[in-house]
Length: 613
Image (cartoon, rainbow, N blue to C red; front, side, top):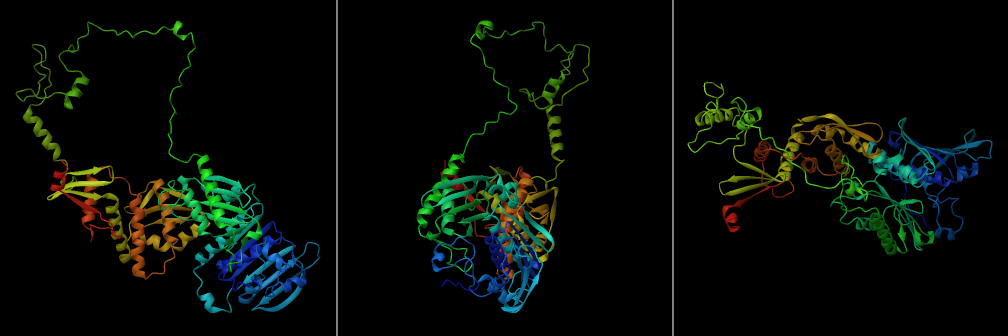
């Protein structure tokens, strides 16, 4: 009645099905052991209710299930699995060993299946619960095994499925071990927010806002991120319905509508949203993987979800505000009503010294006067001469100090200019406008250059050269910067470590969920704050699965990396830096347009300037 076809697509599919079965069995501790990203071994051990020897054999039969008894139960699904397809599908493409014992039994049993055939059953001593060992996945279907992705990609999918289950049961204990390395050790958490912190780190958890509402149609709970914590990647976005993870582009629009005008364009917030509704009003069986669901009143839930998030953001006053910096300021005293009687107000008296003579310094200018004169405090008289303090000395005394005449003064200034070579100073007048534009005079008018787009073009051509010559330049950071990115994103950096290194990035894993940035390509900013933003942008770029030709992929990746570098570029602070940027831009093969076709520069003719006056 409800068969949905193949459910085992990759190793992560096996992890999903076995973990969900463990939770349905009432386990409060589930351990997942992976070897070679699931291609060699997937082991899921739980302390749930276990099975009898007869059930341990029957559970591998197609459509055999203990989770529904009648067809009416299909309209009130409260468990993860219910079709009886998972174990049958797994046994068809792998070697499966099940060891299980019920808590009241003295001995358990071991059942072995391979290629959908029952191989053996034997009594063994085993802990209460169930332990599934799935070896050599797709060993009898070589075409399926051939098209599996790399180990890092497959393990990333496993981490994703593990996360989906762990987030639905924060009161249970979950472990994940890969190649004898502990990835997650999740103890029972006091609340969902603690589980989120354990899995994604404090940086994510501390930026979450609580949402909660209850109506006759749906109950909404969970957390959404602060608008200022939004990122360019659509990561850490989860919907759950009655304790089951699902995807919904439709409800995602409701979330983004609530954040309208609060997050920059191209950015999206993290969210962990839990919906609870009557099982009869939701269909969880419209896809083989059960990640898509159908609601009877989805438009009503859309409006409720939007209003709930909008209210939560409004309560927390996420908008423009005034930040008063009062640190270090003196306290304002509070005066009593008799203060004026005790301390009558009056004008301050100004004291003078009539005997003070500012010129009485033995005929010599004071140090303050000397300094003022040196920096131009005096100007030439009408004849064009500077004052000569030799004449100010008392009669018969030589001061020994003389300011230079006008000719000497000019010669000195000319000598100072010779200290700088022509190649150091800009060859023409250059003006930087608000750190966004460079303006300089050309024959036909005024040349205006967009600094960010010019930088993007320069970096684009540098990266293309790196791809072709494999000769990168890395600028090492003074202090390495660590960024917590999550387990899945660490795997992304490991997967693309070779291409990142070839471009000049020195980014290495540090623990299970953190990377350390030791260096960036030449032209990138080495400021810690900008490097953290750069890591987020890199995740966005590297997360895209690319099936393009190598030549097209090189151009596409160079364009994306150039945009990241231009976005985090340090602001120009001097005409010399601006001149260098202009020289580098005109050395490019195309100085007028970026790789994506946006104009870099324009010329304002003199006629256009004349029309404005």
